[in-house]
Amino acid sequence: MEQAKTPMRWVPTLYFVQGMQFFVVMLIAGLMFKNMGVENDQIARWTAVLGLAWAIKPLWSPFLELARSKKLVVVAMQYLGAVGLGLMALALHLPHWFGAAIVVLFLIAYASATHDIACDGLYMASLDSKRQAAYAGWQGAFFNGARFFVTGFVLKLAGHLETEMGVFNAWSTVFALLCVLVGVLATYNARFLPGTLSSEHGDMTAGGVATLLKEVVVDFFKKPGIWLAVLFIVMFRFAEGQVQTIGPLFLLESRDKGGLGLTTGQVADVYGWVGTGAFLVGSVLGGFVTSRLGLKRAMPLLIVAMAVPNATFYYLSSALPQDMLHIGAAVGVEMLGYGFGFVGMILYIMQAVAPGRFQTAHYALGSGVMQLGFIFAKSISGDIQLAMGYQHFFAWTIACGLPALLLLLWVPMPNSTAPRAETATA
Image 1 (cartoon, rainbow, N blue to C red):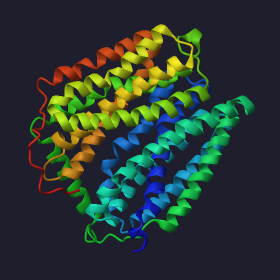
Image 2: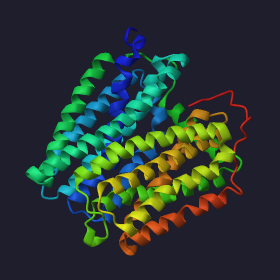
Image 3: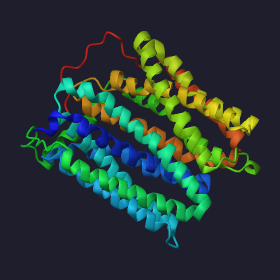
Image 4: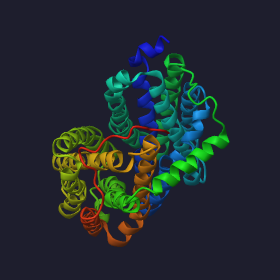
């Protein structure tokens, strides 16, 4: 089809919408609730529950293979996401606004997770291997571009509107505008996405998919050393899940409660501009260093890099600097270390956990385990912070990174010369 021959007409908008819906739920929602007076433990607990959508999506992703048109699923989920954003604008005006907002965010989260599955399937079905590789960089660029847009522009706009019309009206307006934006992008994608029909799994039934899914899961947990690998994945993200949840809330927290007392607009500046850029630079550097050293030799360095955010926030909670240049530089260092170290877990799952008969499916399961570890840490972070205070909490997160380092003595690591699996089945 003609659309399939011009991927730049649809790859940017496809992955921009994917990223925007994810970051609205997993990043923006918590900052919004903080400004609305919700306690850290409630924010951490409920945003963690929302994150389950992306952790458990491998459980229903095989059933989407039954849909011959991935485009139809993608566009439907984008419109559903737009409806959810519109409902968020209304929910914030209800008497029980917090409960209503959580329900609507559930809708957005599961629509977004389903969209992730379908859009990746559409990408692979519409492009040959050569062009899949050629446009893979654009995928990441526009997904992370959505992070920059959400934190650098949407959050900045919310901060400006908060001073003009109050917190609730400001965020209601922001969600109404996001509803229109996603609706426009969904309409564009309905026109320009390739309508490639999938015939690869045309003979599959729901029962056959369920049987295959069971086989994939059983095969995953029969792998040698898999439980130690699962423990390593969980512990790798144990400190990160806590500090990435509480860190942004600490920036907004008033100084009389141990925070830095930044405005919403100031947080948008340090995370949207400095933080996003530093994260991308760190990710590129982490990938480069790992490719040169090999994963086994690079892993200790990557784990130490994951501790940089914890140490940075401990410093900020101790020094409590007031000038934005100082704070922005610290956030830049934090996100640089985060981006550098996070590469390690992606490559570990890809090279040590996924290889085998069901490589693609096992990568998805490994990623789900990784997300579950993050969610577990996220869900308890608010309670721990309220019990300890910010400074002691960030010291605690530094200690939480040590078990992953110790596990390197026993955890199976891939050899750089290990052969790739010949069969990759989802």
